[in-house]
Length: 335
Image 1 (tube, rainbow, N blue to C red):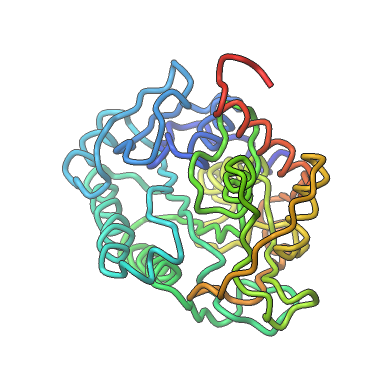
Image 2 (cartoon, rainbow, N blue to C red):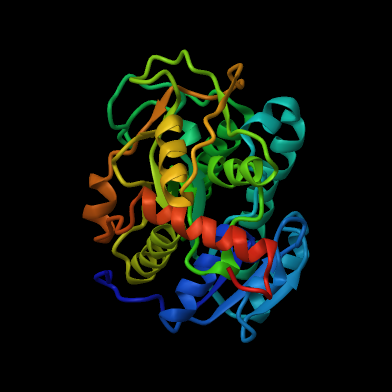
């Protein structure tokens, strides 16, 4: 789908561009002919994910002066900020670290952008800002009630964008991701095991059953319900947001990125079983702290503002993620 303003024409810097989501965003921008540069400390990112024509500046987003120098030297028009710690459970155990890196990273980046005169930012936010909701589909206007330090840091990042825009010529879009999965190609798969689908693959390929954290939630089957979004669809949303900022189509916006359809953890296990052609059951463990029972997006606003909607479903996500997982295990030998 195309946006009213077309693809972004200026140079865009993707912070965290060698990560799982970041590499997909870089690939989508390149496919639209947008000049791209990347800043990544490679603590979790993988440089080989990037196209050869894209320069990766290895540095931390917390190094304000170095980031400002890159933004100025590359004549960057806008920034897409994806560099952050993202594991909900880990954030509960290490809240100070999450505040230091996630909130500190936004402060450092906004300072660098002001120094370099960069007027546009697309910010990676999260559905974790909502916390528990009684709504069947959560709208962007819902009162944020994050239940984990991770969600809190993402909400504070949004507040910082809005505050920084008041005295300056800063246009921003915060994309509240729901649960990201899948891969656009085998080489761009999710290498972490913090997310449900790769965690399930790891257990299955290690001879263990998938793990269900809590079966007593107030949901139809007792397991958590989430809105799963294909990473390729998410990458397209970033391209459209960047283009809309450049064209002036949006200036300050919070947008959900999801499918508008919820799937329970048990339903995900069922899809995995169908795709892999095996049934292993699952092991039920206690609830994890910070996990709301259900998070499903209302997606009307992003359709209205950016002309975007998800194209791929859960089966596409699981199948593409499995292909990437197998490639990761045997990158040279095929499947």
